[in-house]
Length: 97
Image 1 (cartoon, one colour):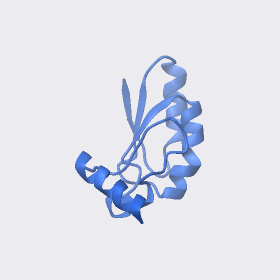
Image 2 (tube, helix red, strand yellow):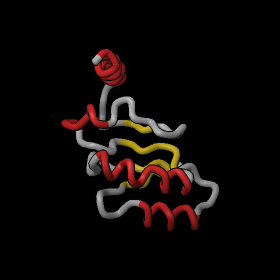
Image 3 (cartoon, one colour):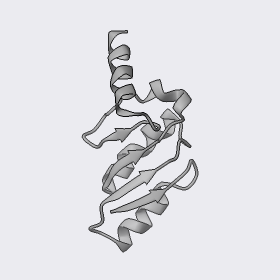
C-alpha cells in the first residue's frame, strides 16, 4: 500500500507517475485538507481511473458538511479527520435536514 501526500497543485500527475512505476500497488492519497469540494469533484473520476482506493482528508475540517453524504462512486471518500461517531452524527443530522 502506498500513501501519497498531495495538495491543491500536485495530485493527479504524481498519482500517474506512481501508478506507472507500481501498476499493482494499492494507492491512497492524502490531501491533508488542502482541496475544495470543487477540486474533489473534478479530480475524483481521474483518480478512480488511476486506481486510487481512498481519498483521505480532502477538505478542511471547517468545511466538513460539504463532503458528508457525497459519494458519486463506489470508491470511499473520507472527509477531514473525523472520529467515526462524529461522522455518523453529522450524516444523520444532514439527512434529517
